[in-house]
Length: 158
Image 1 (spheres, rainbow, N blue to C red):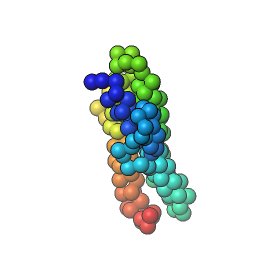
Image 2: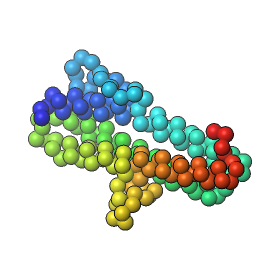
Image 3: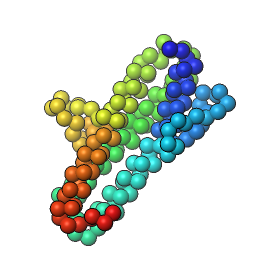
């Protein structure tokens, strides 16, 4: 409802996404009400496990394909995170609420996409395509990949 609140929220958002505690709104304290790790940390961890699993002996092409679907969601999440941070930094520099109305709306839209994904092709599903799947789909495709590995008798030790 006011510029101070907007900029405090923007600082929180940037710090949560980046895993930092930088004082972006110049109030004398950098605040991060999140876990302190940032989205990139978790995406890096998931990707490292995918890399290790892809190198394991006996990995089927079907499982490798499923892992690539997860990588698409990771790439989308990285893209949206960057977009949100860029927009939130614009909010931090705003002289008033009205001048950043479109950036506020777009940041909220990207945040929803980051979490829930988006159905770009209007088929009623959030698919593992560029620009569609987000963080919620990582678990869906991860469970599918894990089920494939368990059925094949491999990769169950990680």
